[in-house]
Image (cartoon, rainbow, N blue to C red; front, side):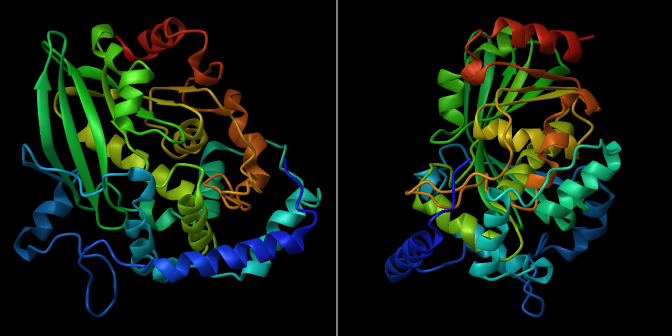
Length: 366
């Protein structure tokens, strides 16, 4: 953990950086439609289908636009949807001042905030995490809220079918996924993979063994997390969200759960056999995700943190800077209390993939 002393220079650094940054960027929206009266996202502009959409167990609409493209060429710099989120989610905001935020972090660094040690029942811990992240309003009705999925690329190999997907949600905008399914008859067990910092879905596919899952009879959905590069983009988005009572990692958790929703919608997937795996910051995210969604059948983590990350010169605030989650970190990281089977592995999967595939074979296959 990093010290806040001396704090005044850090505050001055943040103020100067914020001034310089605001001089060359505008907080533009992502183009999502809003209700003129409430500012809330419009989830379906076809009122004639509203009742049908509400009746669907998983409200997903799929399109195919082969050759289409995501307008986010550099995922680490795709900030606009998150600033738009602040407008859409304004009714649930809990604004605080810069000084109050720094005081929260300082209290943790000074040892004035003691983490909870007595276990909580699973539902109480779930409620505590959702409240600390301020995403209860996103979780409520997540399956009924419209999720649009566009297939912009599709390829086949001897072992699998690969699809490049764009997910569009009314609150968090558009993000990408890469989806591999084995050849042959389903339904297949599946795994959602969340990469770490300075990566994206394609890098997870190529360097963290994503291509190997279909040969083990597993589908895999790899999601790209935006604004995840340990840089000023991540700092400024994290700061803006924290000052409004939200957290960047809370939105990453929500995006992972949208992936879970999509796999539950897909007919080729065995819906009771969906696993989750994280790497680095993806594990930090997924350690929370698995506490919020007991429907996962298995989970692999390669990192546990205390959610008080702070102080990097290039990123004073981080997606792992969540003062309200810090008190629960010992409970979150005590996987013996998880209702989902969890395997912890060395960082970066340095023991190799055999133990991971053996674990998924145990819990995801009949």
